[in-house]
Each structure stands twice: as C-alpha cells, then as structure tokens.
Length: 603
Image (cartoon, rainbow, N blue to C red):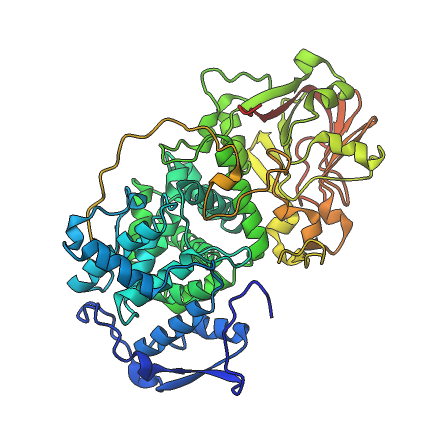
C-alpha cells in the first residue's frame, strides 16, 4: 500500500471497515432540504462494508457508491478525514468549543470581522439554511483564530460549507477542516493557505493545460486579453460554479486524493468547454463560468469524472515538484502578496524589444509557450551573431550560466525556427565533449516562427503512453456560485500593495513545504527529467547536445537541428524526440542566430 495515501484504521478482529449509516442519520441540521438535490436513497443499503484497501476505497468514491445515501457519505467522510496524517497539535472539537465560547459568549458572529485570509473571496452557501450560513462564518472565524499564518485561502469557505452539509455539529465540521489544513502527508495538499501558493497552483494548472488540453489552452491564450486571469479561475470552476450534485462527487474523491483530483476535473471541464464553445466569444471568463454552471446540459457527473480520471497526470511527487518550482519562481520575482497580475507575454516590452530575427509580437507568442515560472521574467539577449560573430565557442561563453535559453535561427531563405532549451550549456562539459551525449529535460521543445508559427514538444508529453513514471530510487524516496446565495458580498479589496521582496528564506512561508535553500537558483523542476520515466528507447530523450564541432537539438531517426561550429551551415530533419517535421529547408545557411535568456532581477 502506498505510503502517500491515507490509511483507513481497521479493528484487528475485522477485515473490513463497517460504515454504519445509522450513526449519522441525524446529520443535516444545517441543510435547506428544499434546495438539496433529490436522491434515490432507497437504492442504498443501511450498511456498507469498506475494504481495508485504499485502492478499493478510491474506487468506491470514484464510482459514487455512497452518493445516494447522505448519512453514509457523512460517516465515510468521518472515517477518511480521521485517517489523514496531521500535525501533532491540530485543533479539534474541544478547541472549537473553547474558542467559540470565548469569542461569541457576549456577542453574535456579526460582531466579529471575517479573517483577513478571506479578503476578496466569496463564500458559497450551496444547500445550507440560515443556521448553516451563520455556522460557516463562526467556523471560519475560529479557524482564523487558530491559524494566524493563513494569509489567503479562497477555497477554504467552500470546503467548510461542503463539510457542514454532512457534519453533526459545528465542532465536528471545524475539526475536519483543521485536519485538511494541517495535513502533513508526503506530496499531498488539500488547501492553499497563501497568495503565493494560490498563484503557483494557477501557474501549475496553466502548465498542465498546455500538455493535457492543448486545444483549450490555445483557445484561451488566443481569445483572452489576459489568459492568466482565466487560468486563475480554475479552482473556482469547481468550488464556485459546478452545481452541488457535481461538486460533492468531486469532493468525495478530493478527500482521498488531495488537490490532484481538482486538476483532473478542471482539465476535463476545459476540454468539454472547448468542444462546445463557439469561436465568437465576447467575454471568455464569464462564458466559461456560465458553461460550468450549466454543465448538466452537456455531460453527466459520471461521464465528467470518467473523463477526468482518464487523464494520465504525473504522480503526486512530480506534481508537487512542479508546484514548488512555480512557487519558487514567483517568490524570486517578488510575488508573495496579492497584487495585479499581468499576462506572461507582457514581459516582452513591445516598445523596446529589438531583435534581428523576430518581431516583438512573435517573441510574445514564443514567450507564452515557455513554462510560466520563466515567462514571468522579461527576455534578455545573451548572444547574437551580429554582435558576437559567428563562433560557437563565443556562443557557449555568452550563454553558460543561463538556464533556460531560447535559440532563434534565421536562414538565408528568410525562414525562422528555433528551440527552447531547458538546461545550461555548461552541462556539455560533464559529457566528455561527445556530440552523441545528450542532456536536458522534457520541457525542451522546438518550433517554427516563419512562415508558420508552431511548437513541437517532447513526444512523451504528446504521447504519454510512451513513458511510464519510473519508481523513485530507495535513496531518494522521501519518508459567482451556482447554487444558493452568497453568504456575503465580496469583501472590500484594498488597493494593491507594491511588490514585496522575496523572503530571505523559504521557511518564512508557513504551513507549506518550501523549495530547499541549497537548490540551484532558477533550476528547472526535474518533474520532466528523463530519470522519472521508463522510456522504450534512448531516442525519445535526445534533447540537446554540444561540443566543439557543433550543437544538436533532438535525435532519433534524424536531428531537429544540427548546427556547425562556424554557425554557418545547418540541417533539420524529423526526429523521434519531438516528432517534428523539418523546421525549414532541410539543408540551410544561417543568416542570423540569437540566443535569449530570462532576465533575473535577483542577480
């Protein structure tokens, strides 16, 4: 059994958990039954045995085997959440009684301000009655009292509201929410607790949509004035816009699997939206929200979950690595508090950008293709044949120490192509100077700019069945809402603060794991490194190579780019690494060549 999964505690004398629905028959004091979906409870038995196997428990949640029995779901939630490994001093029901008595003994909930971490957030009601609405406010105020380090958590009100539908009292709901907040299971997270974490998760969703929903990602980036704002809504598509009978099914699995299931569902929603959307959309953000709110007209909850779980995401560990890399990039760029966001491509200054090869608009398109943690920074020219001459050694000397880099080539036929290269060219020195020795990661890609703009990613990204996630080595193995009214209107949003400097240490960001200090600055997350995959052949991972005789990008059956030491003659072919066609004329002469990097204000 995986150590990353919650364990269900089973009495020694029994092989299965016996979830007795009658013990939670009285839950639902906070529910407005006129708004609650009609369930076919007669189809469920009063007692269901839950196997010890976490795999079987996940299967039951995914199949909705307790979906039609409210009291059964309540008891299942109780068992699942109790099994989550938490911090030692996690507040429980007793703490809630003490804190709520102290806070509300001489005044009502309206005498207390809502916690600062709800600044700008909307709180859902779903199917709660007036008593439930008040209870949610009290619970959130008490959570704010016990967790002063939480600075921003837009999903927490929805989580509390959903839990309250299936809790016997406020104290039980409070304890359950605290266990989700205080989860310490390896590479698992339930609730973002800072603006930095929230922004990183939005960037992560953008990265995932590039790989798993390319049509949807392309539609958003080509139709939205600020695509980042659209991707930042991904969590609220689930906790804000999905109808209650859909979101509660997602929540069933979320309690077992953490936020990975949220990424799956959001990607499935984006795929469905792209299938049904009209190309002529005036307000993309509102249109997606409207689509999700009316999702029942397009696909059943069972089919939606089926499509979500058919998406083969990376492992919890690899997802965590990507999330941490995005957090580190945001922190290094000074984004630690809420502030206006700009589109990634806006890092390219249209007025001052200058290149012999590409226009500012073309550079913006290419910049939108690279991982978000790098597109936060403006491009900086590292090498140009116009300035530094046609010398491979000069290219190496100008580019070493920079990671990643973007190579642009303009041929004498005025065709333009290039490559995004994830790894420092100094890595070639560790390969004994052999051209045939490749390095880099799966985030490398090649592209064409003229006559047509097109990107060709690593073949394993496009065809994930080619590579299975490799098991970690023993040495590295770590030990507006759709239903109900709003509880409250949006809280007053203060004027955006100035950019703050990055914290001196990742440990200052409480409640979340941080990227180790000793890691190389701006280093790519290894979540797409070759060692994380069991590939059918080496040709599927020939990313970049170089020595004194030339450089090669891509390999296997041919080379995507092969450039000589004089930076004069090149060749391009189909290669197995990127499954690309020739990027220009197969044999070409170089008119200009440039290498760009990401400007790091920290250095």
